[in-house]
Amino acid sequence: MTLKQTDIGAIRTAYRMGELSEREAAPDAIVQFRKWFEEALERGIMEPNAMTLATVSADGRPSARIVLLKDLDDSGFGFFTNYDSQKGEELDVNPVAALLFFWPELQRQVRIVGRVAKMPAAKSDAYFHSRPIGSQLGAVVSPQSREIADRAVLESRLAELEERYHDGVPVPRPPHWGGYYLQPDTIEFWQGGDNRLHDRLRYAHEGAGWKVVRLAP
Image (tube, rainbow, N blue to C red; front, side, top):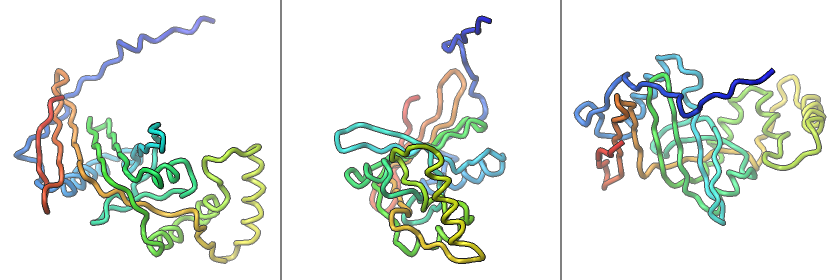
């Protein structure tokens, strides 16, 4: 059977779901982000807190992956991971990163750039112990980004830990696992527009507030 080859160049979507004007946008970037995030929640988007995290290695090679936003406060956008993973190692040598939220159901994306720092240990402890027991054990078991012989390595180790930590025995947070905050320098809000004339508003820190400019699509 011959498989039909899709003409990728012919895939198109019309963007006509809304506009983003300076008049209606909040003067504070975090307030504007929360507004859009709440609208994504109300729309029932699957994992609206999923975001692309882009980091750069010591030799300038970029890498990107999906992580989940788990906190947002004055410290920045918070997420959790294995500190010994590729992303953790890259953040150690180059603590600047980018985040991207994409909500196609709303024809919106948000781009964020800023410096990254580890969360206080107490904050990481609190979140770690709020997770389901299986997720806690998974964080202990996995040497994230390292080569392993096969899946059985993980399953065997998980079985050992399930035997050790049962009937409510607390799982200690491993020192190689915890949170980061990205403190934004710039946040750009993108709303798809008709005829590809998308709306782009970029917020940049200026003193104690934000300067807002419009970018061409």
